View 1 (cartoon, rainbow, N blue to C red):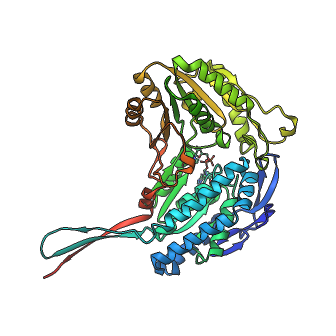
View 2: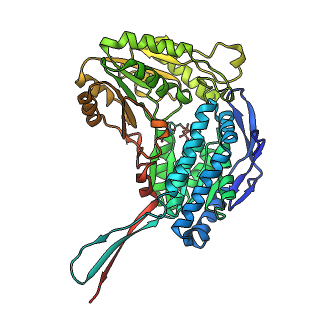
View 3: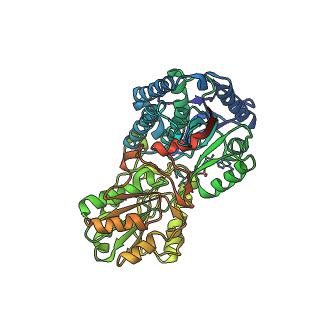
Amino acid sequence: MAAAVERAGLIIAGQQRQAKSGATFESIDPSTGRPLAVVAQAQAEDVDDAVAAAREAFDAGPWTSLKPAERARLLWKVAQLVRRDADDLATLESRDNGKPLRQSRTDVEVAARYFEFYAGVADKLMGHTIPLGPGFLDYTVREPIGVSGQIVPWNYPIQIGARGAAPALAAGCCVVMKPSSEAPLTALALARLGMEAGLPPGVLNVVPGRGGEAGERLASHPAIDQLTFTGSVPTGIHVMKLAADHVCPVVMELGGKSPNVVFADADLELTIPGVANAIFQNAGQTCSAGSRLLVERAVHDEVVDLLSHTARSMQLGPGVDDPDMGPVISKTQFEKILDYVETGRREGARVASGGRQAVDPALRAGYFVEPTLLDGVRPGMRVHDEEIFGPVLAITPFDGLDEVIRLANQTEYGLIAGVWTRDINKAMHLAGAIKSGQIYVNTYGAGGGVELPFGGYKKSGFGREKGLESLNSYLQTKNVCIKFG
Ligand code: NAD
């Protein structure tokens, strides 16, 4: 596989092809601001073709008639091919998305792990028998829900693509995936590897295109049976309404403003790199980024000094050069982030570090924002309440357990949270009191967390991805009750 993709087609029914209209868009390299690839732009008619191909593979086709163990073998083969091409895929992800090469390598490894993990469960999706007394046999069967539409954002294209596709395929579903037009290339590469692995035509289709066009068509398509959406809250709300019109169940993986809570007794040698990585990884463009730091007042100054030192020493550069931090995805995102920093200043926050475009003239053409610390942030400020989706950490001091619990829960989001302390009682107390779908203690993220159920409380969404729980979205339970004798 060549690292530099210049033209990429849609993947529909096991074929690579152009959009019927011939429409294309450019995928931009955010490290340089220059076009990286010309990509076929799916429109409604192409999405219709992809859904028809998935329907055929599900309703009449080979996918549902395969033995589960055979499905498992094919998924395992996809994982092997992802590993075979890991270097090329990681380079492609770094060019398309801008993230440092080592982060892309992790994403590719996690994508392979999703296919392995769900390959392992494809032949273990069992039902129950339910005791009704003499003369009855009652049992449940877990059947695939059908055709799954999957709308994927630009921040972790191959990882999130695999996170949705692998459990759906393991459950016996067929998939139509719409990656973001900001970074579609590794999702297409994944589908090509699926074809090479021997997935039958129509089982995994990928149709990059604009959200308002291809995304809307997919979400409102009457022939899909389920929709997994990962993206922002406003788009999620819109997509839910489209899906509601055809009573289509949805999984919503939305945004976050996740707190990292640092107590005075925390091991700072462990905590500082953990807190810095939680916000600066992928230039802060992570739904589960630890974008709020709640720090106990006794160690506030020390923690801010240490984090400022870390932020200032971070090297920025193009993703393929494997710097500490790459660019943000686009000019729009770049401007939005710098606007938020200005808003924070106006609201009374102090910029303890960063806050500007990167000063290195060699980086001026790309979308580089300095790793930024905003101190003295309080609830009610926009930089506290809203997801910035950039390398900006909002810092708030606290005194005591009651205050930190109140602060931790004081946004509309509830995706994940981190707690850093040597006191198991405090850790357990917060693990119970914080309203979010996942809590980490003295760690953050667990390198992808393939095995761990992941999803939101509150406006961070509903439904769970990853782990065994993800399979529930792609299976439906049928109950069979037999009277005999
Ligand atoms: P976005 O909502 O703008 O776009 C997400 C996807 O939806 C893209 O594929 C886009 O093309 C598509 N889309 C846009 N408008 C659409 C429409 N009208 N109809 C149908 N589809 C449409 O989000 P983004 O900017 O790509 O990603 C950033 C957001 O995603 C952040 O809020 C982040 O927190 C969230 N996110 C959440 C998770 C999670 O697992 N919870 C993971 C990654 C990102």
